[in-house]
Image 1 (cartoon, rainbow, N blue to C red):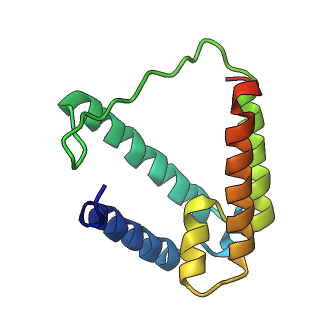
Image 2: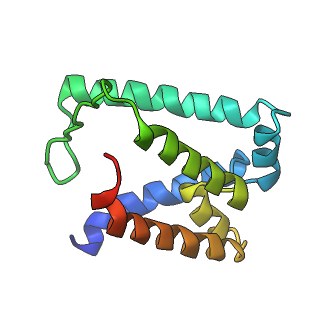
Length: 142
């Protein structure tokens, strides 16, 4: 993929970072409020994101939307008949990481962009965790 083809994704990422910073979803104080059930702010944003994602997936599936390079977007159906370890374990690990660092993966980069260099420790830990998952994936329940 050429650098020129990556430009739209870079611009969308920058726009996401600006929105994340302005809406305070990268604020550790807002995240602490959420985990202590002291404010609705983050729940409202997460609920809005779920709604936008649901509508977007519906539109992608119904209209056969393609990528910028013309490839069809394929969203494989989920196997909901076998709920299990992968959901509760993955969700718990994600939540613990989020609570410990005060940021989920997207906002970590937005925080780094705002000058919070201490978050680079969390970025390094997330990359190490992703690498570890890749190594252990064949042995994990999927």
